[in-house]
Image 1: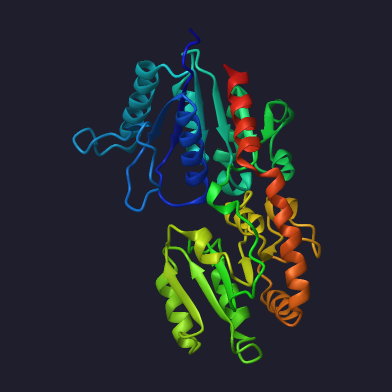
Image 2 (image 1 turned 135 degrees about the vertical axis):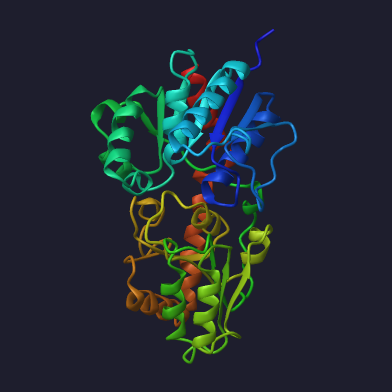
Length: 364
C-alpha cells in the first residue's frame, strides 16, 4: 500500500487575507484527497478562515511561561520549538508562506532531510523590506528545494541560483465563484474587497468616487473588509458627507453572493502579488478596474481595454476618469465583464490544485 503523503504548511496565522485563504484552500484540497496535512501557525487569532477539521493544527509560538525579557533568547526558543515540531511530525514536505516564515522553514529544517518549498506572496522587495531581509531572501532561498512566486516580475528580485528553482503557481479559488455569469440588470454598486490598510489604498478610491457622485446619483461604493484604517476611512466618508453613498460593512463570508450582481469591481492597491479578489471578480464576469501595481499581478490578469481596465498606481484623477468612462458606457462595461469571465478557464480548481500537487510531489 502506498504511504500516505504528509504535507506540513507554515504561516503566521490564518487571519483573513489573500495568502491565508490560499493556504486554507490548499489544506482542504489535500486533506480531502487523502493526504495527511499539518497546519503550523505561530499564533491563533480571531477572525480566522475556518480550517478543515481533518487538518492537524499546531501552534508554534512559545508560551507566556517560556517568554523571557531577551528577544534573542525568545527567538532561539521559537526556533527550537519549530524544529522540534518538524522532528516529531516528520512531514514529507514543508510548504511555507510569507516573509520570515520562509526563512524559518529553511533554517529550522536544516539537516532533517525534509524538502522545503517557500512561497513569496507579494512584491519581493516589499515582503523583504530591509537590506538584511533582502540579502537573506536572495541567499537563503537557494537552499530551499522549491520557490513559488506570483508573477514573472518577481523573478527579477532573485539571483540565478534561486530563479532556477522558482515556479509560478496560480492561486486556488473557491468553487463558490465558478458560476454562470449574471446577465440581468446589474446593481448600481461599485465594490472593493480586501484588508483595509494603507497598501490597499481605499482612500484613493473613495476620493475618486466622491468626485463623480453628482454625475451618477444612483450609484454607491461599497468596500468590504476589516483593517486598521477602517475608522479613519469612515471619518473621511463622513467628512465628505457621503455616508449614504459610500458604505463599509466590514468583513463578510459570502463574498461571491454579495458582489455577484455588482456593476464594477475595483482594486486600488499600491502593491499586490496575484490578488485573489481580482481573480474572483473576473471569474464571475464583473467589469474590473485595477491599479497596474508591482509585482505585476493585475497586469498578468488584465489585457487593458479587453477584459478590464488598468489604471496607474495612486492616480486618483485617472481612477475617477476610468470610472466615469465605464458608467457612461454600460455596453463597454458589459463587454469587459464578459471577456473577464473567460479567466475562469485557467483558474478551474482541478487544474490549479493539480499543478500544486504535482509540484509538491516532485520535491519529495
